[in-house]
Image 1 (cartoon, rainbow, N blue to C red):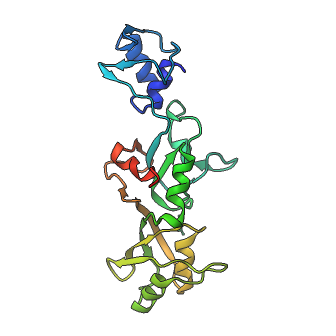
Image 2 (cartoon, rainbow, N blue to C red):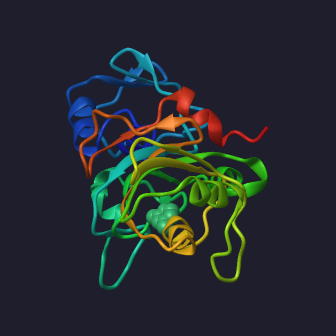
Image 3 (cartoon, protein in one colour):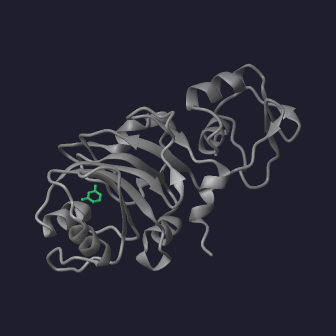
Length: 232
Ligand code: URA
């Protein structure tokens, strides 16, 4: 693998930053300074340092993205902008995909990864990984509506699993799900004759959407945050 690519894939720097650092003599491979960004390294065996710090190759990348409205949760689409379009080509690691889907007009936390098994694990309802959404609905939710939604409602071909709701106003609240059917929250609110007017995912498996990220911005998950992808 190219040295600059390895540095990018480890989430240490963008491709252009990595190239600049390598050309200015800040990288060593097995004790020797290497100034060519395309220098071929063995990611599993070579000892690589950048700016005096050891570079450990990571097989998987995890990105937290603050999704704006108007992007579909897909890797490609012939007609729509996708969440992957928000990551520049040079930072886009091969195999990156959105872990779960948010609707085109839903905002907030999307995790992008190339870890298929990890994504499968956190998305499986069996593992009870909680996703928290902030919502607003068109009409006030009654105590009966909340109780019905929390127990599970018929959304067509499916009855939803128990969930948690906390209200911050008559029409504003948070809903915590451990599953993710197509348009689930919208269909749940329709099941109690209401309508979602705002939806934003604010947390996934205990990872909170970073308030320092503006809509459309992203950052790598921290080592602590990545732990949800490790199967127990
Ligand atoms: N439920 C929905 O209805 N839409 C989303 O985007 C996520 C959950």
